[in-house]
Length: 102
Image (cartoon, rainbow, N blue to C red; front, side, top):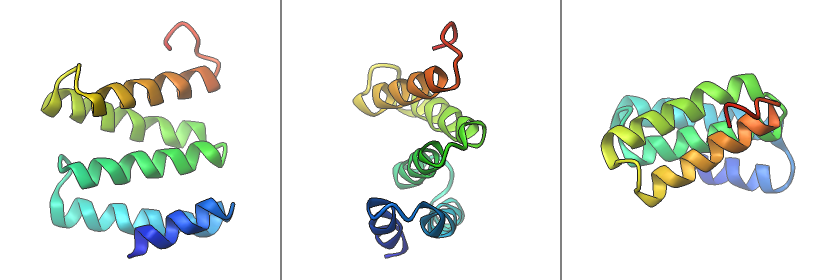
């Protein structure tokens, strides 16, 4: 699938090449599954992770925020997937130097 190709490129360090594939995969999942589906949330997180690895922290932030918000609404604060998203958000905030918020 398109996402598998993107992950392979990411593993190879080809981040710029992976980006349009992840963007397309996320767009497709939003259109077909909706914004709250677990596969869409996975794609949101993967896109945010790629952007973080590329140093695009400001672009990654709204994606991490969206994923965390939806997981809290649908799964609750103590679900393992929500806790992973909380951790991802905290790591991003630390990377951005926003230690108080993290």
